[in-house]
Length: 474
Image (tube, rainbow, N blue to C red):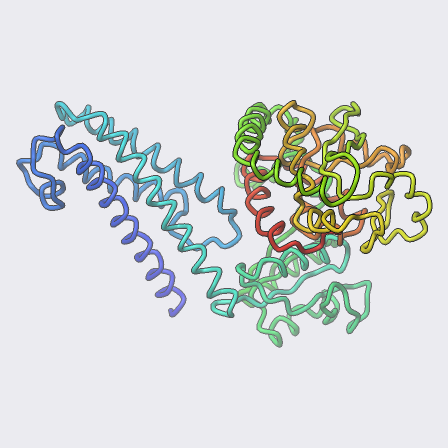
């Protein structure tokens, strides 16, 4: 009963705030274009005065936006949904409600409704609804991260998928998922994986779920059908939500689609070529890189002068890399090492601190004093905006490895060459230099298989605070 009341209160509050936002948007648009309206602009005159020939249109607009917002599940607190996707749903609601309003104007035969008012209202509604949802999301994440309305979670399976899921949950305290531990039939109870212990076997689920007050269980490994059905029945009896990681998700291309054939739900592993969706990616890269180069030109010039003052040698370091389709290109960087750094590499190879074909050490003696500052905040990467501008790189994508450091027999590299390499990517926002080569490759492949504009946008937004903190870079 308490939960239902809370859900009702939250939904009612969201609807009320939406009504205020839409009303404010309509009022502001009317105020800015009051000379086109046949009435004195006030809240009462806009919505309630019969002498206003447009008041029915404004009321219809409020109800239609509420209808479409509800249809797009915007009156729920969906913590797992990415910000970009929620904002996209808002935009869709505004678009469809605007079409419905135009139809209402036509069907009700409302004469002389100003088109400028129509456009302004749609723009203001979108802005207001997005802004308040940004504050709502920040507030929810703030209180959830401090323990409000958290859920106790069990992870079934201690394999790579289970451990990775634990890491992803740990990075997102705003989800409010408190991990109690694992259930696993391979590793013994008490063994630790990813910072959490195995609490027992899968058969122990009912007892452990009650003892640990479990709200949700994530299935990351797939047992036989009988065990799965039994687990679902037990979870249903205990009122525990079951979430299943799709088997082989890391090998799939594109998105998963759920639909029904009759009464049978189907989960489709879509292998449609994702790259054909990227028609606008190159245009965005060109405009963004040109704009950034223009805005940042004073900073780039200042850094170039400081590099020359810091140590002898050229301002730029040109590194030969593999690009899309295996084409080689020179990647631009501000020089952060002494000018003969490449010749000194052979003397330092035995000190490599990362696995795989990449060479990195924390206290590299070849790095100049100012170069250490450049590397910490990734300022040495800024000249790659030139590579993005001329089409050799993208703002977001798998990072290109130096040709001399790439093992040519490593077939995993082939997949990374399907797209343009990027200035930033998943492993930049999730550890930078402090992650294993194998995980780096898996993240790059997942990015390629699941690319979307909103994924790129989220990576770009997360890159800024990561770079400003200067963690994990050397």
